[in-house]
Length: 83
Image 1 (cartoon, rainbow, N blue to C red):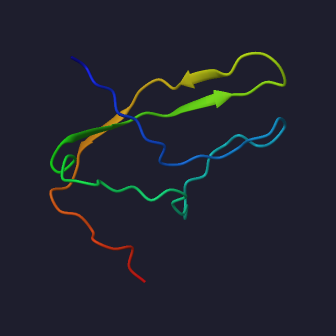
Image 2: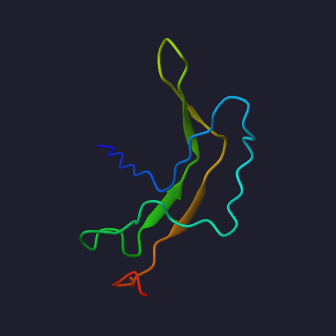
Image 3: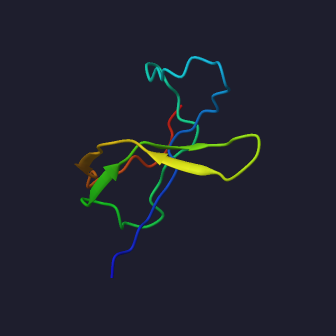
C-alpha cells in the first residue's frame, strides 16, 4: 500500500499583477517543521513545489511543478529553536 504524507513548509499569496518571482534569500520559516516521533530520522524526504490557483469563481486548481529534490533526513535533530 502506498501512503502519501504531505506538509506545507512555506507559502505566499501572490495577487494578480504582482511579481511572481520567488526570492528565497534571507527567508524566515513561516511554519516550523518537526517530527513528533522518530519516524523521519535517516529516511528519504522529497520536496515538490506546488501551488493553488484561486479564481474569482469556479474550482480551485492545484498545479505541481516539474521535478523534485530528494535527500536523506538527518539522524539527529535540533531540540529547540534557539535564541
